[in-house]
Amino acid sequence: MEDYGGSDDEYCYYDDDQEEPMDGIENEDSDVLGSARKDSTTKVITKESLFDAQREDLRRVMELLSLREHHARTLLIYYRWDVEKLLSVLVEKGKAYLYSNAGVMVDDNLSSNIRRCSSSSVSCEICMEDVPADNATRMDCGHCFCNDCWTGHFIVKINEGQSRRIRCMAHKCHAICDEAVVRNLVSKRHPDLAEKFERFLLESYIEDNKMVKWCPSAPHCGNAIRVEEDEVCEVQCSCGLQFCFSCLSSTHSPCSCLMWELWIKKCRDESETVNWITVHTKPCPKCHKPVEKNGGCNLVACVCGQAFCWLCGGATGRDHTWSSIAGHSCGRYKEDAEKKTERAKRDLYRYMHYHNRYKAHTDSFKLENNLEETIKGRVTISEQRESALRDFSWVINGLNRLFRSRRVLSYSYPFAFYMFGDELFDEEMTKEEREIKQNLFEDQQQQLEANVEKLSKVLEEPFDQYSDDKIMEMRMQVINLSVVTDNLCNKMYECIENDLLGSLQRGTHNIAPYKSKGIEKASELSTCWSNKASDASNYLPSDDISSGGTTILKRDRPSGSGSSSNDNINECSLSKRTRKEVSGFFDLNMPAEVIDRN
Image (cartoon, helix red, strand yellow):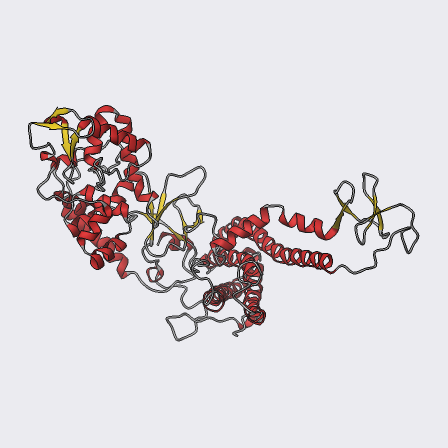
């Protein structure tokens, strides 16, 4: 195994894209654009952009299948807004299977203008009354009932929380009713309920979509986060909250969601208090309260007055000598009770070992957060001095690396507690395999811990009082230690994913991948595609477009802008081309604000 625990003079690092070692100084003036981040793979969906985000998927399905909007929405809700799954079903099963399963009835000859039944009067099969054709509505499936019965049916379903998929009233008909008809009929009798229906349709994009979740901030910021690739990841909302997208708890990688849930529960409940009581106390045989021994004599007395033997817990009298208790003998060995006590003691000590180290690194992380203001003050003083050194971004970047590495190190202890314990993987590893894997992991954990502590120590030095030569020496140490800790974090994650969890329950214990640049901050959802979405509205009848509810939030276009749709498209295309041209590796010397901006 590669050793990273050498002396301070031995540090040097290699970039993955280069063959020559980099000493950390030569690329000080490197092009900032060469280190820019790629476009974010996570998006923030605000209240204002929720409609645009939903329309993006609707447009894809509408253009691909030449469907009207409510048919596309019905398909997407049924397949939980998973466009890729919808397309795979289309390819494997065909369009007829796709439509029938989702309850979509496509009638090319039917539009919102001819929803009325063909005859002059209609006999409603629900209320058994004859009504004029103007007061009856026919759905895509062909069933025609009076508007009063339709309205009553819609109101009941909306109040029952079934707004997203309201089925036709006809017996054994699985067709989904047109949302424009629902909106139009309900709004005439209950406008507030129509708005509720509209809101349910809009929020279904978040509630039913596994790739979109509400930000768990409290108080709630009103944002939702959409991930583009893997749902097992850690994200940062625009409100600043970092969380695990999979379980919506605080970030906990390299722990899996199940491991973190068990660890939090173990730290919060009284299970370890009970273990301590089991190890250090004995129950009184009379009142059953726990009694702690505070002397050397094995005859103890409870506050209730009962005397008993500390060795066996049996009730006794108070007469005793230095060697025995009068009328009492407990020299016989009881295997079960002894094993139970030893097991509880071993479990308690094991938990305390991992918890103490987890707590120590968590406390260090909090204290090092306070160090940030001190370092910024020292940077300000150093920049004001008459010196040739003006760039101190390496200090801020080194501090950010310390934060990320410290967090990984602290969460590695709960991971180790469950990875090498008996609760989760007892039957999946032999004792010998567990020992080999534990030694492998603890070697890497030890190296990471040593270098994190070195980095923390170097960053605490008062560099604002140093000479230029000593600052350059400190700069070399910070850059090299930062790269070493980053490499060690990467190696630890590779070890966890390949060597530890590789052959075990990966489906249950997936972990968020390690990201060298830190947890990705979600970017605002781009809406430059909306020009195409407006073209897709040609699939919709004009009545459908004009009957939209009042709760849908649309993007306002500045009046008098004079920009055409082509100009907007070109502008978006230009920004995309610019992002594609920006590439390269991560430069540790790049200012932190530039890294965050890109």
